[in-house]
Image: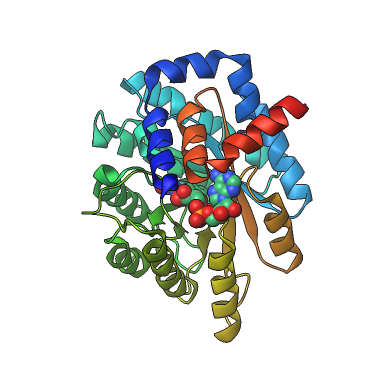
Length: 314
Ligand code: FDA
């Protein structure tokens, strides 16, 4: 009963701008966040990618930032992603990129965000790569899906790995099953996750049991769709449900990938690779790490103790 309170408290803190600017500029904050954030610079993210690639793990790179205040800031955010796509190509890394549309200006002007993101997807086409559009709060779900559909329609490839742009669906939303069916009909690749924002009971299942049940239902639709999707979770019950379903239905275990966050359950990441599954790790980096970091604490308030213990150990 205590956990939902802590969760809400961390989500509320994730939106506190005073604490944010204080933390992001403080060396102590940077040190604490380093468990979940690869570093401040592009180079840090590329180095983390090389380390994971050497262990047989793919990466998706997230230049941290959300809710930009003007079009120039949106263009600057996109520029980092253009640099990432070039660097991934140049170094032959097994990595793609994950982008938030609010970082590309969605809340300023959807056409601006769509245009900036279309350039990124165009660059991904040229570099034979892939842009994953992260999903944010429920007020933005429809706008995000509309933009992704438009971007995807602008391409011409078909097949399970087709397309250079995909999206994220959150199992906690009631609407997700319908969204998934529509996206699959369009051949769009999906990352399934539980959902990391605070949502009201009008739009999202309030209980973990219902979210988990929906996750399993949606996972089953995805892995038999013939399209290459991502199953993003650290929940062993969700992972086991996936493994079992894939075994029973004789689905090719390499026809989808598991995805996890940088610094979370590294033991599970490696175990899945050893079992022959594909694993991709989401690597966030950059100066604007505070909201991301607080959402990770909200998911598992025990992380605070964990971080504190390690902080004093080092
Ligand atoms: P759950 O929260 O039930 O946790 C199950 C178990 O996993 C815990 O008991 C613990 O052992 C471990 N665990 C989970 N989180 C942990 C943490 N932070 N630290 C340590 N252990 C942890 N969300 C979203 O809304 N939009 C998005 O675009 C994305 N993108 C995304 C990409 C990838 C690759 C992942 C893995 C996740 C996301 N998410 C996301 C976040 C997602 O919605 C969800 O909040 C977290 O993955 C936590 O949910 P779990 O499925 O791990 O289960």
